[in-house]
Image (cartoon, rainbow, N blue to C red; front, side, top):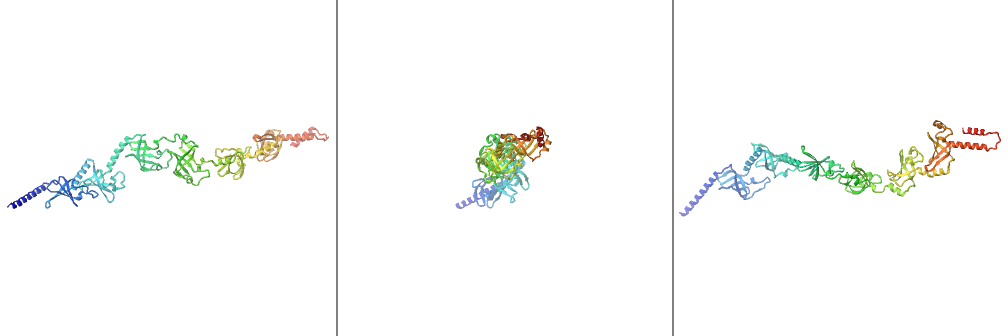
Length: 570
């Protein structure tokens, strides 16, 4: 009897427990979320203590993230909603996902109605890369164009990341919608730009990162707003393209030149951070100064040399060597080379400096003058004859110059009358210094010095010489005594009578050879004055003396002698 009583008691307890469990299941509110605790995780199920006689069973897949990983463990709290009761097996099926959908939809509806932002996680990329799905409890569509302000180049990098979004559109029936991240980013940027632009002042310095380089300048991200550095504001020196000084990604600090708050534009300058090096350029780099500098660029006509930041000079190909024009600049210099150069020209207004390399060496003309001294007779070839001078090639790379005044001691109309291009001549070195064009000063007339000395020695005043009439002018007659010696007969020395120019031209012809008497010499000036008149007088006197000494006892009178002399003169 006692044993049966125990069995009966046990059955009663089981029945009571069953009744309590049935009652517990019947009292479940399917619309109210339940807080639970994970007590066991199986391969496909998660058992949750929901505070009732019966555990809740959750599909394990509902707890996997976008990447398929389970991000929870036993003991974690979890919020679920009851879906249905399995009375036969005695458990309650619960769902987190359905609760998330309910709460998520309420969240996005509230955000849409109140025009506020809502947080969500990008979980899936559309196959055609047109956009993403964003988990907000419910899945919202995020177009690719709304994912960022800039074009999204690597969509995969956004997967699994949480952002704030703006709900643009909702479909109540399907519980779907469209969201945008770009709108919030643009709003954020506008606020940031307004705050930033109000904090900046013209004349102040600001840091940024170079983002874009164009032909006309470079754009710099100042932290939400772009500043533009125009090409001419990058450097005080010459630059062909902004990329010569800047690269994308460079961190720079520029000076604010102008702020357009209405158009949200800022002009920056790099060179303005420093004093203009061209202000005292003449003091730092006077013509003739020798400096060591760096080759920054090589072009077909020369090389650009950086003397200091913002100051470049041009080393022209013609100033590389004295040995003629090189075939290429690269034969002598290369980018990166540091070399000594000399300032040979400076133009502050045009910001141009001309440099020379060959000027550091002795000029070929200077070397020539070391070997040949003043007064030495040298040989050369006439290369070019101008109206006022002639150029003579003395040696390779060495030219001399003969001025018109150094061709003859007398006045000449043109060097071309005495020098012909291509002919070989001799000349005298006149100076141990070069002329302003770095030519050797030469003279041709000095070769006749000995001839002049001989003439003055052998032809004193009163000497009779043969001359050739060269030119007749209003002052008298120019006569040629020899190729290198000219003389002059003044009007008063042509005839006893004062003749007109017409009468002189009638009685004397250019090219005619006659005798004349030397009346005056100026050896220092290489001048000779002659006279037809004095020669005629001398002849008359000689005739008179001749007749007066005659022993002829004829009745000839003195008057007869004068008449005879006059007839001869005529």
